[in-house]
Amino acid sequence: MSSLKKILVPFDFSEASLNALEYVTNFVGTERSIEIFALYVSSMPIDPSDEEKLIKDFGKVLESISVRLKVTPSFATETGDVIKTILSAQEKSNADLIMMGTMGDKITDEAITNTSKLVLQANCPVISVPYGCSIKEPKDIALVLGGEKIDDKDVLKTLLDIARTFDSRVHVLTIYKESVYAEEAVEENTENLLEYYLEHFYAEHTFNKNQDVEEGILDYIKEKNIDLLTILPRNHTMRSTPSEGRLTKLLTLHSEVPVLALD
Image (cartoon, rainbow, N blue to C red; front, side, top):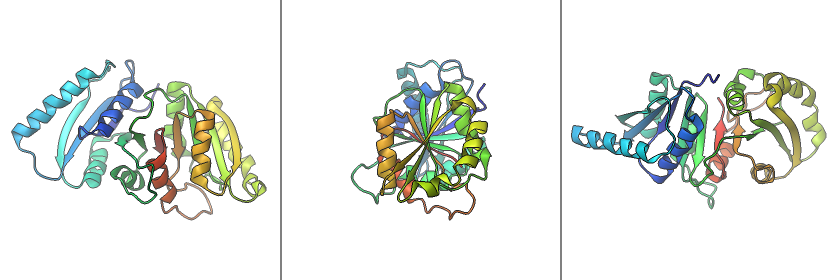
């Protein structure tokens, strides 16, 4: 049984948010008692007549989606800064997970989207859903790890929950630039933790050499037909320097599959 009870979906009727909502409804499915909480954030106050229209329009969107959910999604409007308002709503609503659509940007490495900002600032798991991604269950999941030892196994809780829900295979990937031996030095302890905490869903640990870490990850996704990429933005590891978020930003911009950022 899934421990996920509520998923917050920022929703502004854009193509990216419509795609994300469709992905979320498929993720929840017809049998899971998970509430979808759609949040519309406006920079300006919304008058009652406009709010009523937004509610009706959201209802029409739900009618157009083929999945018949067990729990009827809720919809609310808020006024304020997009990121701050979403994070505040997540805390107030006790949502377990945020799923947010993104158009991404395959060309540039410097664009900062609301989604990439949210991923870096959130204190809860976030799945960024790229526009145009396949709407399907995550049967093959890639977890990207560096060579450091994980010191907070609880950060993997959401990943395990998703793996249990969909009976997924979790493929662990480490990209190294120089010597694989340095990476494998902590492999034994890491393997024991992964086998214990990810149970039988843990499939393999692959070490690939690439000077460009992002390129190595994206190549692996295509090679293994990965459905969901999982990253640890804050490097929940021992003896490591906290990430400045560049790799996280690049992956949310460039990945063609949803990215689960654990926190």
